[in-house]
Amino acid sequence: MGFNGFKAGILLAASIAIVAVSVGAAAAMARPSDLVGQRLYLSDSNYLEIDEVRGNVVYTVNAAHRSNVWLADCLSPVRGATLDFAAFDRLYPLAVGKSVTADLTREHRHWVDTVTVEGEETISLPIGTYRTLRIVDHEVATSHVFESIITCWYAPELGYTVQREKRVLRGTGPKRRKWQVVRIDRSRQRSEPLTFHAPPPGMSFVTSAGAYVVRDVRNGVVEVDLSQSERRVLFVGGLIALNKGYWDAETERKAERLWPLAVGNEVSLQANWDAATAYFSGKVLEKSRLEVPAGSFDTYKVEWKIDGTRLSHVYWYAPALDFPVKKDIIDTGVRIGGWELRSVRGADTVADAPTTAKTGD
Image (cartoon, rainbow, N blue to C red):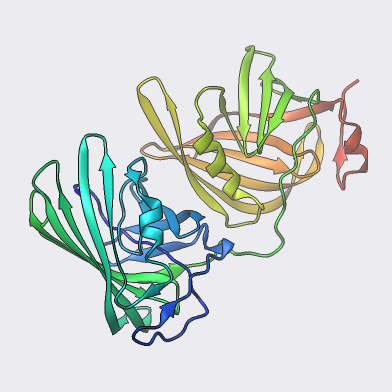
């Protein structure tokens, strides 16, 4: 498969219980849920963040916001390609000598991949020395001229492919690319998480920008009407707001990755409207006590940076209300807009919350 413009690739396939693999022994595969959100930094200055895990398939997003599907611990077609998942599943549990052949299709292009677990090899990396399974993918295009050999070194002890090399034998693209994992960031696995709860339909949050009236709640998305402009707004994951129609289901699912809420959690999203695409990087910065006209609240400060600009949107989310109590729009460090919560209407549950809040008449 062609990978023009592709900076790096990796499949993270977890099997953390295995420390050593002997020739002919199977590498049992387990997929811990805490892999999601982990970030692997590579020797080519790129990184990969684990976006989702489904069985033997891992989905990642890299530093350029490229989303890839990882198969057989080595292949990395872009998300949206037509894949024979069942064929690649036959390679598991991984064992020396196993091999599968499967077709890949994207738009009008077609490839045939033969993946083989060739053997064992001990390699030294900046993150340590590991016994690995060497997996080789021979890829040949049938719709155009292209052929490549991809070799991956998978470390069962870590559950990561820790080194990858691609050689293009025929066709366009760099003739050789190689990277190693130089650092693994597991910092998203934090204690004291806060689970998502949505405000009930009918609740009204009166802000300096108008009243947000909750109309519907579904799968971590709070749909509200903004009375001042009669716009329908979605608070995706309860933590970022854009006009309805800007998000798709995939974006909503990614936004939910900030939950359970904890300081340090981060995620990358994209919003599409007209012919433009905007990329947002969100991170939970800190917990703090905040005073607004509506009262005093314990909050989580969540910053959303808009890639390619100097703009950021900052929300202070109050668990006592299940809603933000303040928003700042920042341009090059200067606040240029936003709002604060003035009162809450129809919020009978606020009386028992650990905060001081003002409710409307």
